[in-house]
Length: 267
Image (cartoon, rainbow, N blue to C red; front, side):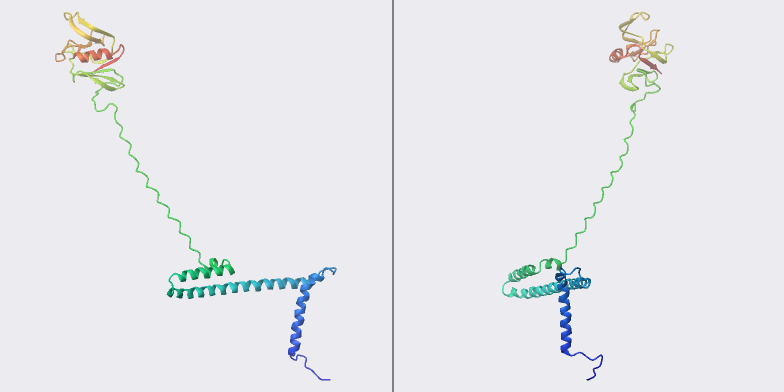
C-alpha cells in the first residue's frame, strides 16, 4: 500500500471528470422538471438551480447583445470613413455608399442608428411677447359751462326773460341757457324807471295802444305788471315812460315766445 498526501493535486484526467460530473449535475437539474411528473413533489434544490441558470443566461445574452451592437456600430463608422475615399472616383459615391451601409446595419441591428445618434436639443420656447404698454389715461374733457361765456348777471336760471336795465339789454332763455338776445332796449327814463324785481307775464295784446299817452301805438305788447309795464315795439334809442321798448323783430319774438305765467326778471 502506498501513501498519498491528503491535499495532493488532482490529475488532469480527474479534473476533466470532475468538470464533466458538474456538467451532468446541471443537465440533471434541467431534467428535473420533466421527471417531476412522476415524482410526488418537485425538488426545491432543482428549482433553485433552474432559476439561477435562467438568470445567468439572461445576463450573458444581454451582455452579448450589447457587445455585438457596439461592435456593429464601430464597424459601421469605419466603413463610412472608407466610403469617403470613393469621392476620387465619383463625388456622388460616398453619400450613396454611406446610405447603403446604414440600410444594411438597420437590417441586422434595428434602431441602432437612432440609438447612437444624438437627439437634437428641443428649441427653446419663444420668449413671451411683451405686453403692450397701457394706453395713457385720457384726461377728462374739461366740463363746459352750459351757460357759456355769456354774461347772465344775477338773472336766475328759472326766469324765461331777463332784462338788464343798466346794460340796456335783454334775452330769452330756457333752463338758464340764453337762446335769443334782443338788440338795444329802451327802459324807463329817470322818474319813470322800469321796476326791478321778479314778475310774471299776465297779458298779451298784439295791436295795443296807450290810452294814457294819446293812443300811442304799442304793437306786440306783452305785459308783466298789473300797472301797464310791458315789452312792446318802439324806438329803443329813446327811454320810455316805464315800458321796455324794442325793435319790431324783438318785440314780435317776445310776444310769440312768452306765455302767461312766464317769469320775468329785471335787474
